[in-house]
Length: 204
Image: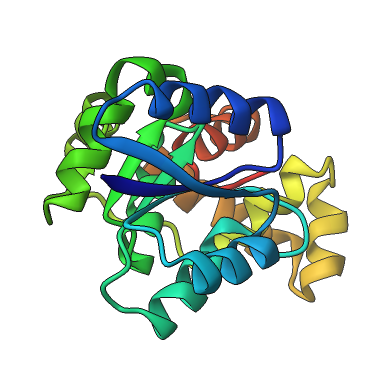
């Protein structure tokens, strides 16, 4: 039996995933957790074969939990559960050490096979996500400053307010926006923010 730990801050999601998993002859639920801190504790206590990890949770994020778990147990096999198909969010999760990335919208169709693949030492990346990653390979990433400028724009701040918050001139803010527009293939700040959110460069 492959023992699975399910981590999500929505009890209904945990219950739904648990029901699907328990319906498979070779899979069983080792336990559940509702946030990153509890996930770290439950992993240490239960030592599951595969962990399903939501990324956005209270107390400690999925990313923080993954990093802590892998520092303690480098062979841990973790699949990220996400609502985002964006290449940036997926790439970030895989760089942290996740062995898989699954969209919540496709869970019912693929969860059992994804768990089996990751348990067998393979990687599992949702097909939609893999396509998104492939479509952006070779593109120049946003710099940390360009991302900061977009994040402040997403909060509704004007160029003047962004300049004050970041301690730079308004002209410099405009230059960061221009560079971001080119990299994201958009023509204005609204679309730049939307594209950054879609790809997981920004999170809300």
